[in-house]
Amino acid sequence: QTGSCFKPFIYTAAVEWGMTPDTTVSGAPISIGDWQPHNYDGSLGCSDMPLKMALAKSMNIPAVHLLQTVGIQTGAQMVRRFGVKVPMSPYLPSALGATEVPLDQMVSAYSSFPNKGIRVEPHMIRRVLDRDGAVLEEWERTTYKVVNEYVALTMVSMMRGVVQFGTAAAASSLGIPLAGKTGTVNDHTDVWFIGYTPTYVTGVWMGYPGKKKPLGNDMTGAHGALPMFIDFMKTFMKDKQKEDFPKAPDMPEDMKELFRQRQRELAAERAELAADAEKNADETATPATSTEPKMEQVTLPPPPKAEEPAAKPQPKTEAPAPKTETAPAPTTTRPREVEPAKKKGKKGDGEPG
Image 1 (tube, rainbow, N blue to C red):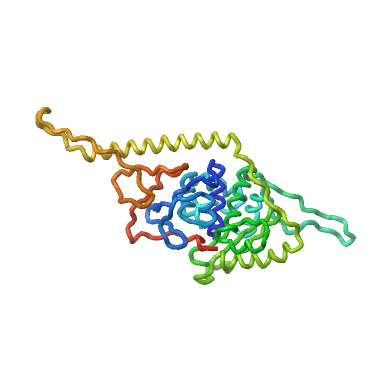
Image 2 (cartoon, helix red, strand yellow):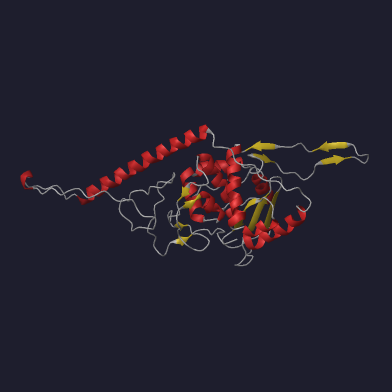
């Protein structure tokens, strides 16, 4: 399983959806049936934060909220566009990397980011020569358009934060422009780091092939795979010319308009839910119809409108009003009261770099 190395696919869907690195994403507790995700430190929620910070710190709760906002189908389609041949399971836990993907497919998928949205199909053999040096067969470059340049380079800027101040901060010691993502499976059977420069993509996976055997409770992507990546890149990049990533262009106008349209749709949906909640509250507070003459009835004033919930979990009400955030957010992301017996979900790799 890929663990949090899977998260950039979901964040890419969010950026294409119209969000930006500074868009605020909810960190409120969320539960689906008996499943309730938590962050690497065991917390069931966190403060709302910008997308770039949530990705850099590998927070699990915001990633689930993002997948819920853009939609599971949209997330699954994005994963396929990145060349991942294993279908993403149609459930919210998939945002945390429950899908098993081979290392070569993950490296190929990550090549889309520095290549301005163009994915390169990996290959092992460049050319075949006969004994006289004549070319018998030569590899033909195979590429696929995954996302536009704006989306790809916006993701590069966010994934650079993983190295600059996130879970892979140790890689900044290389002194080269670098971006990437750590990954840790909750039972510590798989740990990852996939990093890239403007020209090269390198992936490191640690685990036992063919079986699930824990590597140790302290083993994470940052503590296992990342040091191997750093050691390799020190030698590999020694004589390479230092390059910098290109700056992301402005958001295309068609994406801006699509984002505004989605904001209007979400606002209308939130208003409808709020109206339903108020109506249900009125029906709950109104006494049963009296059989006495109308002149003897006592009319109770309608209850006040429910206030916006705070960022912290609030007591469960019969019909809560949805939380209003500074950016598009799922209409069902407000905190819910969870019984202590609820199961915990998948850990990510929100450990400090």
